[in-house]
Amino acid sequence: MAGKFDFIQSYRDLDADASRDIVDARQKSHDKIQSTVKTMPRVYDLCKIAFLLGAPSEAEWFEKPIRDLDPHFVLKKDKVEAGKLAALLLRERLTWTTGVSNIAVLTTSFCGRRRSADADVLTTEANMALSNGARLHRTLQGGKQIVVPKFKSAMTEIANVAAQSPALGEAVKQAIEAVVDSTEAATKSLAEAAEASQASARADIVRVAEEVDMLWWHIGDWHELLERPRSDANRETKILASGIELGTLVRQLPGPYGAYGLLRRIAESDAEASTSLRAAMTAVSPVDAGKLARSISPSSAPLVPVHAALQSLARTGTAWETDAGDAVSDVADMEVSFYELGLQAYRERILIDQGSLV
Image 1 (cartoon, rainbow, N blue to C red):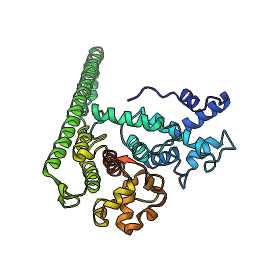
Image 2 (image 1 turned 180 degrees about the horizontal axis):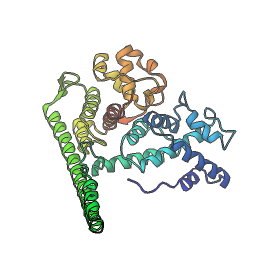
Image 3 (image 1 turned 120 degrees about the vertical axis):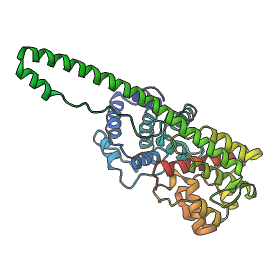
């Protein structure tokens, strides 16, 4: 993970002419807002604000701490300034975790084609953090922890000895208490060491299981969601279905690094060839789109434009772009590579499944 986040320097990098009073006020607002971002829906709202995709319907938690120190600030009018502040909030979160927040930033960026309000530093840092996390497998899978057993109290027995021989009883009490304290401390230390070792091994086992599942999935040449051989699908359908199906095999964040290699291998010579979301939706049938799509709410759709497009294609056919609306209008014709499109679909499915995006 990255080092400690420096708000003052980061804000001055975005606005070198800002007065000290403004910087101080922004930092206070930043700290107050950050303390309230305790759920993923608020992280998703920050993503939309940071990429200038519109203000969420309920944004009092974001706007009020800024207006308290800057009465002239209005979220719906000061979109760029709000975007900068949201980006800085997310960048600070990237120093804490390589999990769902990073993936949410990257899916919202749509292959890096959408730019965040902080000159796109947010996307760069999220990409680096997630890639490093995938390489180093820093995120551990949850499981049953090793806990220190509760020691049975011996106070009744010690009190009986003290009642029979006060002088001897006090010495015995002190000796037993010293032994108990030492034993509890040693046992706790042993349990913590064992838990750390077990957690590391558990994470490695899950990672290996993910990679084995992905390799057998690739060898099988079968799209489970489409129920037909991968080699029978056209290249647009194949790369989208592959990204989505690989995403469903991820059990712990940030997912195995080998998934990136598999997507390149599946795309073959088309990996760096150009396409777009609009071109891909033209090639995918509404029936296949229905098999690949997930139910996404309009408020979440801008964070997962590929899935938003698939959902609309399955629902309305050729009118998908009108149906998807603002969720895809700014990225539909942006040029991306087949590999990037597959990676976008992969990360979106991880966000939907692991980030409880609805």
